[in-house]
Each structure stands twice: as structure tokens, then as C-alpha cells.
Length: 187
Figure 1 (cartoon, one colour):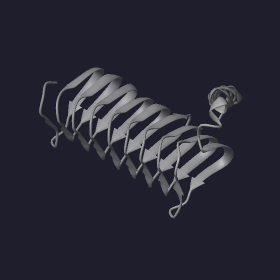
Figure 2 (figure 1 turned 45 degrees about the vertical axis):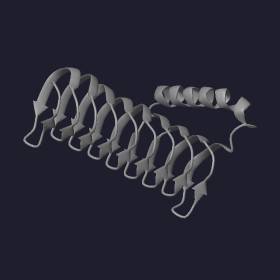
Figure 3 (figure 1 turned 120 degrees about the vertical axis):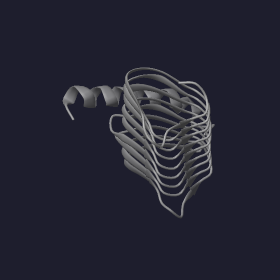
Figure 4 (figure 1 turned 90 degrees about the horizontal axis):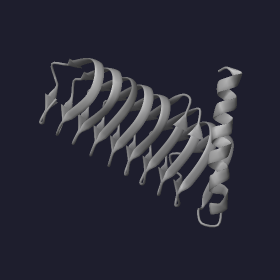
């Protein structure tokens, strides 16, 4: 990572944390650390605000997760929303009860998202299940899982090779509908 990007990421992270510090008496967890880990047997009972180099959630966060990090992997459960700012990858192999929103270089959803996915990323792949809508801005989008409502956004290329419950309404340079594509609405 070059110095300019590292500086920009640090400034954004510290700005986010600065905005959240007045909430210290309201929320249970405000964490700044190199590596943030919620182990498989751990349960965090409150909304969690994190600034870290990398993060992994194998256990349970019973609330929202707001995080500025280099990379994030969720193989456990976040019962609320996830708001992420990442210069690396975001991988959801577990379950998010609410929405996934944020900015990242790469987003991979292999698990489930209970509400919406709203992402700006260079690359987004949805192989799991999204219970509501998807909004993506970025380079490429691959849907080879299930989106139960609409797919919206603007991107350079998109591959729809899964199930979309309603409409696909995207501005795209190159759209491919794969053999397994099922769109119950309009494209």
C-alpha cells in the first residue's frame, strides 16, 4: 500500500472514530487495534465501533458493526447492520441480520444478508443470499447467488448467473446473463 492511500485511510478512520467518541457513554464497544477478533465462542452484546488494520468476526455481534479496516471477514453473525470502510477485501461467509453498506476494494458475500447490500467497490460478488435489494457502484458485479428483490447500480461489467426476485436496473458497459440466470422482473 502506498503512503498516500495509507494516509487517506488513516485520516478517514480517525475522522470516523472522532465522530463516534462522543457516543462512548452510549455504546458498549469502541475499539482501536491492529487486529480485531471476535472469537467463535464470544458474544458482543452491543453495537461495536472499530478501527483496525484487519478484522475477523467468527462469533456474534448482537447489534451493529461500524468499522474502518484494511480487511474484514465475517464468518459468524452480526445481528444488526454492518457499515464498513475498507481499502482491502470484505468477505461475508456468515450471516448479517441487517444491511451491509460501505466502500471496499472487493466485496464477497457467500453467506446471507437479511436486508440490503449497498456497496461501492472495484469488485462485488454475491454468491450467497440477499433478502432485499442490492445497489452496487464500481467496476464489476457478479450475482451467482440469490437477490430476493432488485439489483440496481452503475458498473463497468455485470454477470447475472443466479436468481433475482424482481428487476435488474443497472447502467453497465457489459452485461452478461449466464445459463443459471433467473430474473423474475425486468432487465
